[in-house]
Image 1 (cartoon, one colour):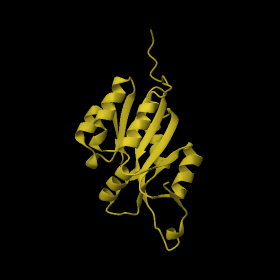
Image 2: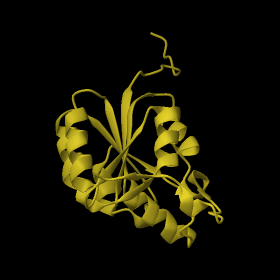
Image 3: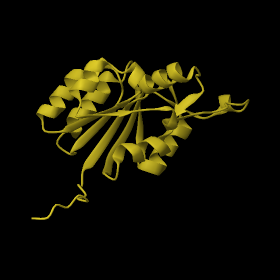
Image 4: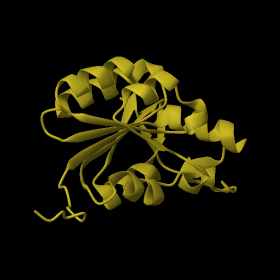
Amino acid sequence: MTENKNILINQSVAILCDGNNIERSIHELSKSTNTMINFNTIIPKLLHGRGLNRLIYFREGQNISSKLAERLHEQYYGSVVPCHKSADIPLSIKATQLASKVDTIIIMSGDSDYVELVTHLKSEGVRVEIAAVKETTAKILIEEADYFHPITQEDWFVYNPGPAQGRNKEIKRK
């Protein structure tokens, strides 16, 4: 029997991003609060040829950039979910709901609060990957996941807000 090293595995992937956790990690490493994740770089890197089923960006706070929401929807049919407090519970609920619908769930967060979620999802037969800034990621989370994607400087950009930035439309949490 000959070995085919170019076998393409068709996987359905959901990416769930704890926006506040990723933003804090990037700000800490870059020493700038004007740093944002570059979804155009990170999403193809995370998918590595696999199919994107869902992209959901969970963000704590009253105001979320409408530009971010529009960009995620237009480019990835993604959505932004405003959270009352932290993203932990809404993200965990959504991951549990998606477990029977996807092969892989990628959690973009380094928060150790997700360890039990990772364990549960794996027990349900879901491959769980973590994407986060390694320097700010809980070691136990990396160890529990099936795979770890380090988010590096290549995956973010620094923006210059300028004087008109404060006038952007905002999505208000109901």
